[in-house]
Image (cartoon, rainbow, N blue to C red; front, side, top):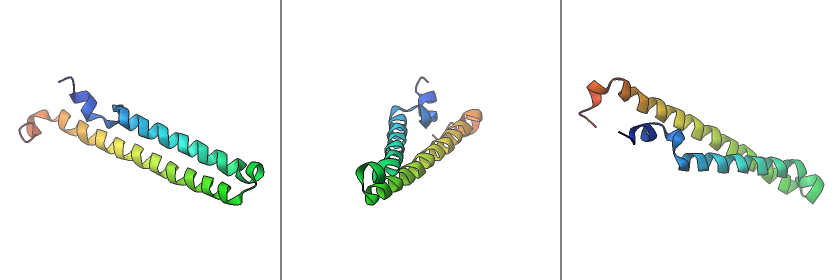
Length: 89
């Protein structure tokens, strides 16, 4: 019983939080490279790579948030009707 709330909501798992923190850090680094790549380092390619990093990691961040939200809702559904689906699991 103690593991049920943890497994029903993937947003509470440490690995999920670590992935989100890494993606946020990558977006911030990409944004910093985009803003300072050409002016500070004199490289347009570095600024473009920073923009690409920020966009890709931002999209991955929202994808993981959406995926976890759907899995949490899916896991909460059988809990509300525990009498119907209990034998099949």
